[in-house]
Structures are given as structure tokens and as C-alpha cells.
Amino acid sequence: VQLQASGGGLVQAGGSLRLSCAASGRNLSNYVVGWFRQAPEKEREFVAHIRWSGGSTLYSDSVKARFTISRDNAKNTVDLQMNSLKPEDTAVYYCAADPPPFHYSTTYDRASDYDYWGQGTQVTVSS
Image 1 (spheres, rainbow, N blue to C red):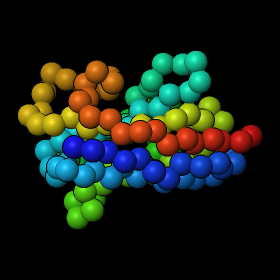
Image 2 (cartoon, rainbow, N blue to C red; image 1 turned 135 degrees about the horizontal axis):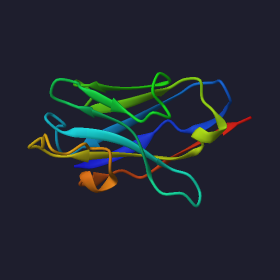
Image 3 (spheres, one colour; image 1 turned 180 degrees about the horizontal axis):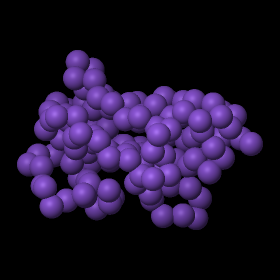
Image 4 (cartoon, rainbow, N blue to C red; image 1 turned 135 degrees about the vertical axis):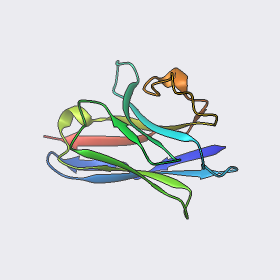
């Protein structure tokens, strides 16, 4: 499966952006799709994930209540709505996908949990 992330840009603190992860080559049914971010000189950090089947989600504490991850079955996309953005949200954002079967012992909050990655999209939040 090929993943394409889009929607990044420059926004002022307090603003919003909506990122989209489009998949091609494979339907995302029964996949887990996650968003990660990486700021300069920092490690890649988990942001959120969604389990396609059932729609269960998980968020990092740093984005909880501000970001919302959702899926669109018809478009085969996963979006990340980011509200109340802060300068510390500035990073390159990546989407990733892990194919079935779903592993109940896996938390899907580590980069190593995912097999497929898209290219990143830059999000810059000015103060």
C-alpha cells in the first residue's frame, strides 16, 4: 500500500489544519492507521491512531482533546483534524499503516508497529 500525506502548512497559534492520508494500492479495511510527527533534532513521536475496523482511536496526551483522527471508507483516507495548534506542534507529520491481522498485545503507538509509511507533510505553527 502506498500512503500520501497532505494538508500541512503554516498557521498561527490557535489555528487549525486538517491533514489527510490517502492510500492507494490496497483498501485500508482492517488496517491500523497512525499519525506520527518529528520535530528537528527530536525522535519521531506518536500522535494518534485509528483502527479501521470498529473505529477505535488512541491519542497521545499532548494532542488529546485538540486533535481528532477519522477515517473515510469511501475515499480510503484517514484525516487528522488539528485544532488549537501550538508552536510545539511544529513538525513533519507522517501517516503510517499496519496491515491485518490486528494484534491485541500491540499498542500501535510506536513507529516499529507500522509496516507502511507515507512521505511527511510539514506543519509549522507560529507564535
